[in-house]
Length: 155
Image (tube, rainbow, N blue to C red; front, top):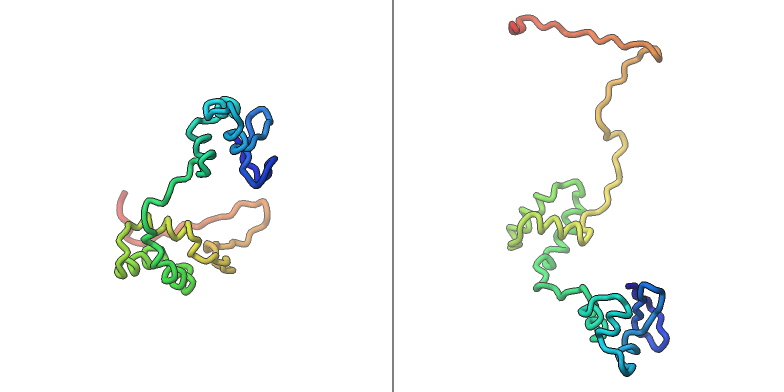
């Protein structure tokens, strides 16, 4: 089922069925003889979904479970992570825990990611893995000498 912004009447949402017909949900509901079951069969959708659209509620979206407990710490986390973008999340977690944040670390990091609080870092030039370059003619083997240490243990 697809929802589009256009409709045949006003700005009502449209449901489109699998065989290409587009119908205005309120027009269907107000036309005589169309029950929720008939609309369900016509659009090949679940009855609860159709009922949700007819009552003006968006299907599949639930209300928040409660107040946002992370909201008081958003500004602090944004400032802290802007100050040092490379800090591990455990450091600001310890700091906001001391400021009365009472959720677990995984909830804290989920909130940081969901709200994009960590600024994007630019890669530092020359900060890759250390690599040793050994000059040798191309295509030839490189000879590695082993270091023989005195007093090595017997095998």
